[in-house]
Length: 230
Length: 353
Image 1: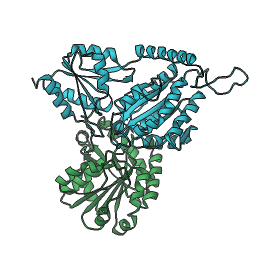
Image 2 (image 1 turned 180 degrees about the horizontal axis):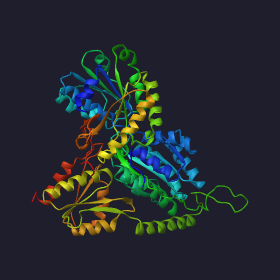
Image 3 (image 1 turned 120 degrees about the vertical axis):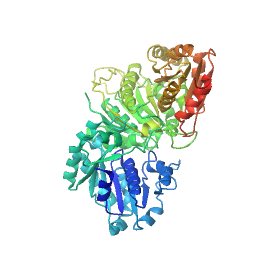
Image 4 (image 1 turned 60 degrees about the vertical axis):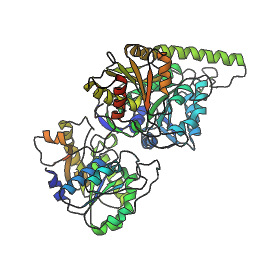
C-alpha cells in the first residue's frame, strides 16, 4: 500500500485515532498528518491526550509547524502542570474544513475527553481508527483488544470505523514481527465487525516486505533521548 | 523461551513484581509512577492479590510494614515527594529487619518540584532513606528489561538479608515503552521463621519491632546489622562496564543517564576519542572496587547525572584524588543530550583526534 492508498480511504474530514496506551497511536497520528499534508490537504493535528504527560504529539509541535500542519494542544502540554485541560482550539477546528486528526489519550480513560466533542463530531461525520498492537501485554488476545475497544466507544460516545494494525516491538521490530501480527489484527477487525484499514510498519521494515499490499510505512517521530538500541 | 512484549516501564515493574510472587501492593498515585497503581489495581483482583490505594503515602508504607511482618512479599511505589513521606516507614522496616520492595520513579525536586525525569534522590536513597544507622539495597536499572530482572533480584536479596530494597528509576524509565521478556524462573521466597503469621500452637511468640528500651541492646542490634551491611558490600555490588578497558575518559552514570552517556561514548569513539562508560547497577552497595580499578586505567573521570551532582561525591571518595573527577548534569526535569555529554568528553580529552 502506498501511503496515499490509505489516505484516499480516509474521506472524512475528522479522523480520530484511539487505542490502548502504548499502541503507537501518537506516532501513527503524526504520520497521517504528515502524509495528508504532503498530499495537499490542509491539516490540523489535535493532541487530546489529557492522561499522559509524556511522549505525546505535543513533542512534535515544532516539526508540525515547519511542515505547515496546524497544531492544537493544551496550553499546559509538556509543562509541569499535570492537569487535564483541553484547548478551545479543538472545537473551532471541527467542521471548519480541512483534515482534522485527533490524537486521543490511551484507553477509555483517555477517550472520555473525546466524548465531550461527540455530538459535533457525529454531525460532521468522522472516521475513528482503533489502533492495535499485538505485542502490548494486556491486549495480546483479540478478545482483550475488543473489550478495550468497547470501553473506548462507551467513553467517547463514538463508534470505531476501522482497525489499524500498528503492532511493533519498538526498535526491535522485524519483518516477521509485522507479518505475524496481521492475523491478530484481522481477528480484532472480525470481532469488532469493522474493516482492517492497514498494517503500519516502520519504513525500513515496510521496504523489506515482499508483499506491500495493505501495509502503511511510518516514520518514527516519538523518540527517546538516546540512539535506538543504546 | 518467553515471548517479547511491549511494555511501559511502570507496567513492566508491576507485572514483574506479580510474577515474583508479590501479591500485596499498597500505594498512592503520583506522576510519573501512577501506572504502577493503575496496573496493580487492574491485575491484583484478577489473581487473588491485594491492591490497596491508601489514604496517603505514610499509610501505604506502613501497610507494607504490616504485610512484610506477616511474611509475604509486599511492595509500595511512589515518586520523589511521596518517597520523602515514606521515609519514616522505611526506617521502621529497616529497624525491624523487614524485607520489602519500594519503587522510586524520580521526578524533579525539591518540594513538589516537577513531573519530568530526575535523578536528584540519589543522596536520599543511598545515604538517608530514613533516620538512623541504616542502609537499604538500591538498584538502578537502565532499561525496561533490566527493571523487570531487577524486581526478582531485589525481592530475593531483600529477603536474604531481611531489609528493604529500592529500585531507583526515573520518569523516563517509568514512562517509556520497550520490548521485554519475562524470565521463566521458579520463584522461591525465603523461609521466614520470624514472621508474625500465627503461632498455631507450634511455636513461641514472634515479635517484629524497632523499639528498644535499653541502649546497649539497641547498639548490639545496630552493630549486628552493620555486619550484615559489610557482607552485602563485599558480595553484591554490581556495575556494567562498556569500553572501559582502554578508556582515557571514564564516564560514570546510572539509570537513564547511562543510556545518554552510552550514545555519547559511541560518538566519541567514532571520532577517535577513547571514552568508556561505567554504569553502577547497584547504588548501595556502591561498586567501589570496580570504579577504583577503572579510574586507575583512565586519565580523567566524568560523572553525568540528572541532578546538581550527588553520586559524583561517592565517585570522588573512591578515586581519592588520584584522578580528576568532573561533573556534568541537568536537573529539575531537564534531560542531558548525548551531544552535550560528547562535548564534555571532547573537552576532557583535549579535542577530537
